[in-house]
Length: 572
Image 1: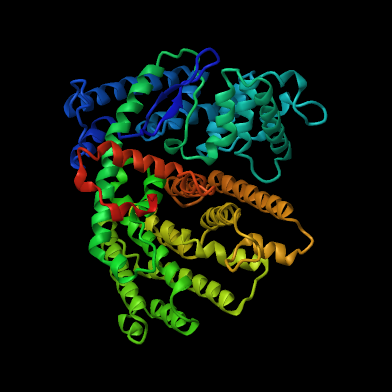
Image 2: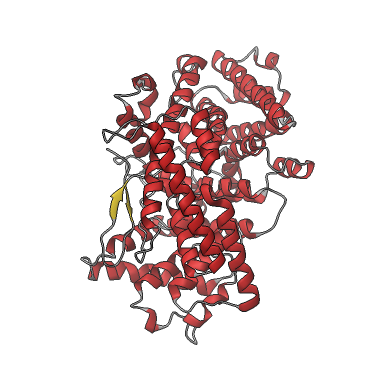
């Protein structure tokens, strides 16, 4: 079944169901489609590959012209259009146009102040600007608050405004208590409103908003409800998004085929039968975090070190004693094939693959960007091995560390820093001595991203696990350290820690630094991954699994060579 999104909901019309995805920049995007051999198959309506690509280019130009006209007029509709484009996951087509609109809005705020009166308009402006790294003070909401700092009662029936304010509250930073309180009020009020007005046409929009806040979700893989006032450009956006779906679907299938072939030829699944064998699940991380079709090579290359993180984790969890694992870690420190001669075969095989893949990655980076990252890459791997080794020692001794000690190590054992370091080098932007040194020192934006992933995974992944089990988690450590705390209280504490980490990440994204904005967006997408990547109820597939399944089943009759039962074992 196709991956469907509810789109273009309004107060008068129910959402339209359709399937979106994405492509690239007018002519340059068509060149990319050609180079990647993206095949747009005939759907029985007479539209072949060529006509679809030409239609895509034509609509893209139409929307670009419309967006440019909104920038010149500097109207609210321009922001609304930017919001729609970003939520449909096609913002990379319009980076220059969006930047021009937001820069103009930010400058106007500085010189003329806020020109909007409606809560929904002010909140949208706040969210869009902060989302793109422009700092705008939360004081802009002051006129909607009473003398006690609470939302004015006159706004309680403004459902559109409350939705927009709830969304804006997810962009808060430390110390913005009034915005946090307003967001929490909106959440509770909208929940109550849904139970009272369950037949209202906006219920679907409200429910979607509460489940998937825009800032903390990946637009392409989450249902999207857009409320638009019969704007003339909605049909063009609708069609552009649908065509993008087809083009990117087949690009993703091509990449899945490439990853599956690489993994099969690598042979680790046969050599290490105790380890996970989920290449396509691993591919879904870079697929979601690097959505731009221009980054096809980056997605496939990043899947390689990412797969090794899972394999190495399994070796530390299921195979080898502490002495062997210590020697395994020492081999990484020495970066010497001879250092594993006395180790079990599984470690020899794994280290040889790690050694070859990392050196190959460094060579490709040097060819592409003129910088050999081997020293930084090996440092990142050693940091990860040391974290895995620490967890193995805790487990072997039965020691339960204090919560903060566990978290400090657990942030590293996510492997987030390893992948972000690889991505930083392979993208090649901002390659300076200063930034390379910064990446080696585990910058705050990386550690904050890893904190969100670790705490979310521990919180959600442990819902069906008793805290007296053997698997380590922040929840278990915190409850042992605080014996009087209930499970519910511990979870509230973790949720607050996650919220605080998001505030810190928001601040990082709005604080000028030497790292490129593309890296900041990559970190944001990584933080957004957990609710998309995993389904913790044990029954439902994740959003990404649904998407990949839809690709495979839609194309199975046309590209049977892509599919292999062993490659999709994670879906069983």
